[in-house]
Image 1 (cartoon, rainbow, N blue to C red):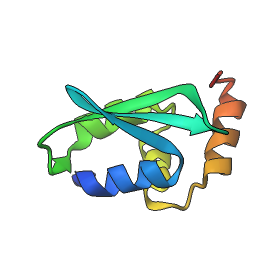
Image 2 (cartoon, rainbow, N blue to C red; image 1 turned 90 degrees about the horizontal axis):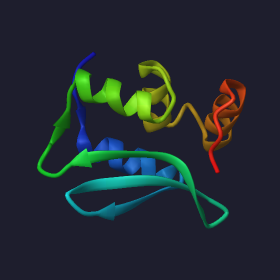
Image 3 (tube, rainbow, N blue to C red; image 1 turned 120 degrees about the vertical axis):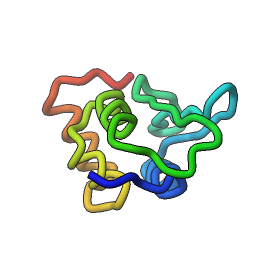
Length: 94
């Protein structure tokens, strides 16, 4: 898999309801109906691209395989589809 532009990941997560907060890293937490969930990931400051290793870690944090993570970022996987995927895995999000 080739590296992904950090901005693509940021915009993809924000489109799906993840809210960014800044600290030592950019933290992204999924919000549903105005409430924080347990689903979260982070991106280090200064990275213009994210490579395979970090894509794998972010996928794991979001409870997805790498392909579904890419689908989440580039929109074939909708928020409803993502929530259904989490439900099917038995993942508690709140």
